[in-house]
Length: 410
Image (cartoon, rainbow, N blue to C red; front, side):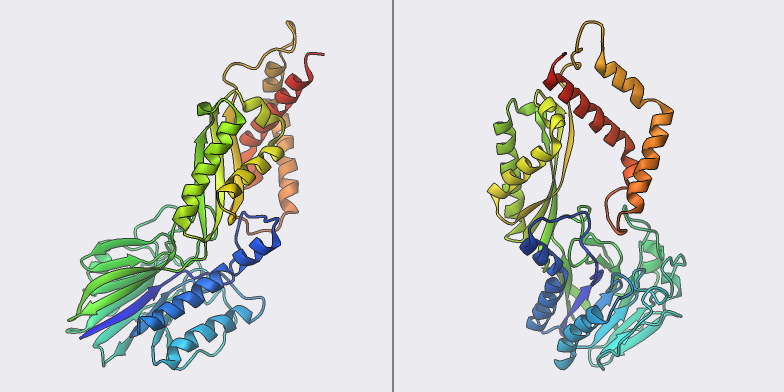
């Protein structure tokens, strides 16, 4: 018997894009629609493939809804599967645990949701498939849910469905931790995992797979995003196919300023690097972070007017492709030689260094940054301002030196 099923996870429907402040309303609208468009395309592709069933392994929603619009959208899309007779299996993860998403809508008849109170199994007798899973009852699930999964149904294709950090993945909270041995001990044929946003085939004996999230949402989630199609033949996984459906990409490039003696050369390098990333994005909207570092004679120009250079960098990127937006411009340059004294008796750089090392100034700066953060809407993906104190002070020092040098010793 042959069949194909869909394994997706971490849709995060309703999640805002973080770290982006777009000045172009049309681009902002495209970005806001990216997650929904990606999910719609996923259902389109799944129907084209005539899948036998679909698994969504947690974090379908990003959190509790302000209204039912996002849930209605999800229900409308999976109803398209149900109308074609495709069973749907849903699991709750940390972002849509029972304690987080407190509202609900009736699901299509062919949609089944794993219990959050105990491990539960569903069967598809016509395919001889048994699915076993347990969702999160609360967000910070610390128990090993894998060891309480039901035993494999002998002679059937058994699938474990779990939202888990496994034995740990960088950048992901350690929820429902378990080991590879814990998973292998259940003797299942396939483990449909969620929670980790990078696509990863952890093992093939048995198959243990993170499909990754459906759409990157911030600069930590770079590269192609989507789900996986699993082809099964004679009770075994015959092939795993990645299904890329994202509508926007994030990318991060670093340029060495030391390699460029003039601004035209640097901007050409930005344009070339941005063009390469745009090619990889294959026509998708691209949010680009550009970092310029190293000792450079251009350092004083950069430090004297960072907003101007942000605009120059964004313009260079958009010359490479019109669908590039600058997520952030980070300057980490330094002067190739020690900053010059303004006169023989006055070392302005040393004075600034002494002032910035003063504990009282640092305490005042932290308090000022905390006041700014208190008035900033929550939910951003960037580090807290207070965590970047040293970088901010260094930027202020460089700006003061550059402007003093521009004004001369007088």
